Image (tube, rainbow, N blue to C red; front, side, top):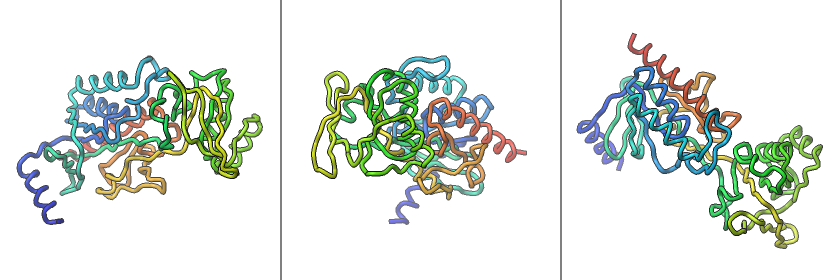
Length: 321
């Protein structure tokens, strides 16, 4: 089987190789910003977009906290993509099948051919972990959210549930309380996993916790009206009226592909980078939600992308000197 794969790659390599200075894997805010900056630096740039995973920004119905822009996430991505293309970056809507390093350069193998680049930028993002319950996907943007910082503003003065028990869930609950929401935390166990300092802040604000309970389904009409929970101790279902359900049970970074190049990841699967977005592999950089950045927002992903492009430019320039 391995020999067949190698033969197929060899055929692609011999038949259709295109050379670039930098190849960017991902077309979310981090990847598109990297493409804009890379192209403006004068580097021959290609960026790859796939539908799995899709950029989380494309699924966001309203953006209000990106400086100078208000609208849908899809609209913002379209503007970024148009800008990258205007500066000369090339867009490929192709699934990346494999990556490999050969003779100091990198090869990106897709279903259509092989792209050779001097530098690689991973901007593959990640996916918010879902509860996988009825009503969850149906009410995204209509009361179900995975980002308190993005959407909390819409729920000021309203009732919200935060689902989870880790640092993110407790931080989200505190934030929502601070901006004026009526917050209740829902956790499946009888104690939180969050750091003690965060728990102290939670209880100091008298934020109630529904212990030993899981959300079974989300119900409503044109928007969320209630969540149906299961008390795991009493094995009893009960409903909680709410205007919003914020799900904070983690993010699954899309970084498996980085292992092709020997890129180091942390225990949660995030790509390890330094302050210049450099990985442990020379010529390989990473930006956005595939890295463990402290604030997973569009604006910070864009900042990562700009830094990664600058670092890639410095690397490519050094190779040519």
